[in-house]
Image (cartoon, rainbow, N blue to C red; front, side, top):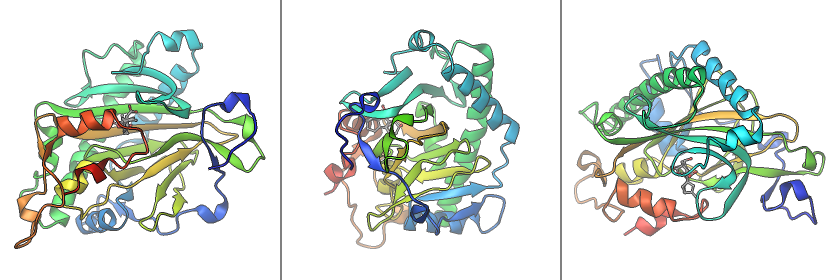
Length: 326
Ligand code: GA4
């Protein structure tokens, strides 16, 4: 982390070394969802990195573009109007503060609840009908992609029941969240060799996260040796990452990847992320089909509700799974 004497605009936002061309991730697994080899390629990427890029996913570019332009329109509203859609917790508009325990980032966002395949009816924001329609269309499509990916994961792991994993997000009462992030350009740090932290390093507590962003880079993942690499942006693809709960269900075979976002000094970044979590009462423990003879679970038993509660009481960068290790 870089420490600067005083730059009021970014006060309280941790700074990071700016990415340089050599940081780009050259070994990115790219999975073609329409190919017969997808299940094996997905399982392999989840074991090695907990992360991959997904192409040929079948979601029309229009669906993605419509949501992006509605999001841009929302984030361009006067601050007072956006604040009327807050606070972010449990759901709504938030700016700079992430979670409830003091984490800060150079971003504004909408955190939204998903009921089955669309925005929860109880979710008051966003109030604009066009934005809501774009969100519902996109959420239905991205959720289908998440289900197909989880079915492929089960196949790639050699599990006979195709819905062993996907069934947890399609189940009644599953806990799905959607967030739209806007990282404005951080002009104050231009040319200083450091960048504002957009979203600090963390792992996602859920099973799976499916991200789409505009053409602005900023996402970085940590490789297993701890090295941070930048993910080249691709507005036509999805980026999928394994969450903590999926790491536990696979008894550590799939890796919940540490990731973060570095704000750009010139361009704004917009990302939209679907987080697939199970029902609150779902037990999170290694699937019996994945435990070899005599193999024990590496983790203490917990339900998703218990894990989520502990996660929301933690700081963003905490190693939440470490507490769950036996
Ligand atoms: C990370 C994944 C999702 O964005 C999120 C985040 C949540 C939040 O922004 O409120 C958390 C973070 C995320 C993990 C630890 C806690 C909760 C912020 C934080 C400090 C919506 C989620 O489910 O967990």
